[in-house]
Each structure stands twice: as structure tokens, then as C-alpha cells.
Length: 190
Image (cartoon, rainbow, N blue to C red):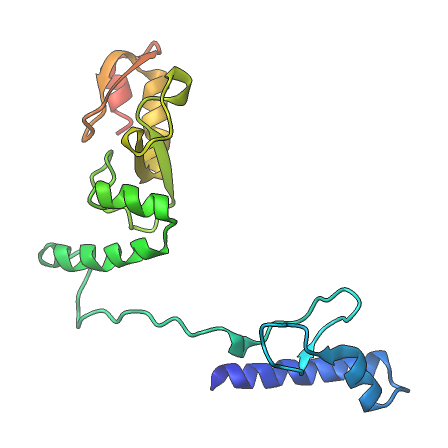
């Protein structure tokens, strides 16, 4: 309903534009010049566009409305009793990821290996190589982890700044680096 109103509003604007550009031409001439069946997948002959370049305006009614899932009653993400409920809601967002990210997320049980939080908390996600490619690691799923962008940055920062062998909190991986800071200084970043 609302998309039809928006399409009507846009077609009115397009008609006014055509009239302003060609005030001495007839409406039939303007229709022939600016309207046509530009999108071959649709049987719609009233699409505004440029016949020379093939560019055209998309119609609002061509897009489906994406409904959001309603939140139960007074459910709050901060309520510890509803943690399972919110994790299930976030897992549904995994279908929006590309297939390789979906597979990694499922393998990690939808948790970031660094902070142990849900992968779907609104932060962007990145792939991390457990064995860096520079050290002979490959792009196989066994060598990849999915983590938050910020966690990935922190992990590499610890790698660069740590001295000797440091264990990253909440992560089973041990890392080596050649920095000058002590373990306490490095882990204070976390």
C-alpha cells in the first residue's frame, strides 16, 4: 500500500520533470521518450528511464517488505534469565552471512573465540587465520576462525606487542611475538 503511494509520487515527479524539460512537446512524445519497458524481467511498460543509456528508476513496489521479528513482552537483552532467548534470535541472523561465514559461525557455536560473546552483537565480522598465511597457514576451514573486527584487531595488537609466549584471555591459542612490553602491560589492553 505505502509502496504504491511512493511509486505514484515518483511518477508524478518524473512527469513534471519531463514537462519541464520539453514544454513544447506533446504528452505522447514525452511518454515515448522517457517511459518504456526498461526492466526485461518485468512486464511493466511504465518505467521512467533513458532509452539511450538503458538506465531507469526502480519502483518501490518491486521490493518485498522484510518484516522483523517482534520481541516478546518486556524482554530486555540485559536480563540474564533471557540470555538463551536472545542468543536464538541472534542465530537467525546467520542466514544473512555469506556461506563460508555461516559455516565458521556454526562450527564455533556462534561465539567469538576471543571475547566469548555472540558473533551477532552488531559488530562487523572478520576471518582470522590461526596459523598466519605468512607462516605457511592456508585458507582451509580448520585454519580459520570468525571473530569480531575489534577482537581481531586486539588479537593482532597483542601479537605485535607481546614478548615471549603470551596466552590471550578467553582463547585457547598461544601466540609469540617480539615486542618489548611485559605480559602485564600487554594483557592490560584486554
